[in-house]
Image (cartoon, rainbow, N blue to C red; front, side, top):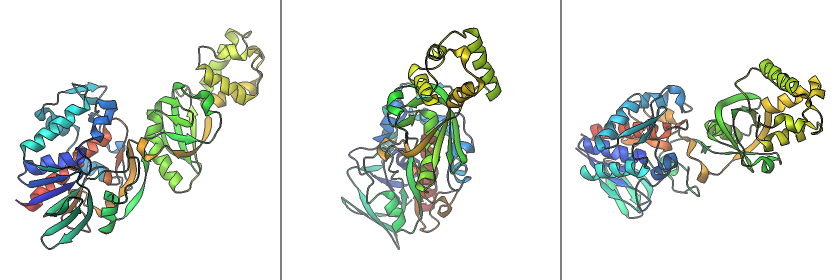
Amino acid sequence: MGNITIVGGGASGLMAAATAAAAGAEVTLIEQNNRVGKKLLSTGNGRCNYTNLRQEPSCYHSETPSFPWGIVSQFGASETVAFFRELGIQPKSREGYLYPNSDQASSVLDVLRMECARLQVKVRTDCRCTDIRPVKTGFRLKTSSGMVTAGRVILASGSFASVSAESGDSGYTLAKRLGHRIVPVVPALVQLKCREDFYKSISGVRVMGEVAVYADGACIGRDRGEIQLTGYGISGIPVFQVSGAAAAALHEGKSVKAVLDFMPELEWEAFLAFLKERINTRPEKTLEEFFVGLFPKKLWDLWIRLSRIPRSQRAGDLNDGQIEKLAGLIRRFETQVTGTNPFSQAQVCRGGIDTREVDPKTLESRLVPGLYFAGEILDVDGLCGGYNLQWAWSSGHVSGKEAAHAEA
């Protein structure tokens, strides 16, 4: 059995290391930070939502739509649960979102580290890989700690997400030098910045609703849940879910807007009837009083200002045009999206190594034999809710298994 070097000690790199070593390979894992798995500690607000029981192709995104599922279907949620259970992680489900029973991300990292130690994986921290060169016997890797030779290489060095700056010798750069195309990398699962100047007045509001994102007039994403309004724009899980599509469209120079619906559970006509019934119940109430108990004060105060209807006007005196104007602000609240928060605040990235240049069954490079990929460095990102970690486990397992078998 030959030797395998894994570049990157995050979730996918650790899984690849454990899988390859379990298959009998001699494994070296190099990590640029002073310890492995640092980003893993912050996942799930420190609790580590390590997978999700609901798994289907639509949970993952890539420019090659079928690519992610081809890997996840080889090592999915059930295999992940079994793997970690064997290492000591007792799963706890919250509506299908799985966490370790300890509610500590450190538990997941600890069992991975222990498994790598048990399998005698050589871990080199504070070691930055700056170049990978194919040679007759495999590869030569230039690192900050000297030269490393390997029969096979798994590049699992992650993305720009959650880092303060883009690295000049990132995994993307290493892959690009080896001939791979990089799909433009943008923040995903991130907050959206908006143009309007009223956001400071509604900062801090949390409200259930739906967000739909449009690029040059075409809908490119939609999700429901708790929307958070901030001083710069919009946030919350439904915003995160559509943010990758918004960021990619902005990168392409498209005009992007978000349309917020603050009562999506009702059809339009039913909603108008609901408003009119509420008016008829207490027609003497002023417009200000009418909204009390229905929506947060900061929000309806903004709607009244934007509608230019006097706030002292009696609800019973509102005409049909005024009612429809207010209804439009509640149900079709448009805002211009100008950008996202930086990579340092993004949970993942959209974009990465073009998956058309990677074997969809083995994750081996189609351009450089013996080079494999795993994790966020590939053009694959998942929904919020354990899917990006599932991608890390799935791709780490497949790349580790295939690299080990190829070296046998």
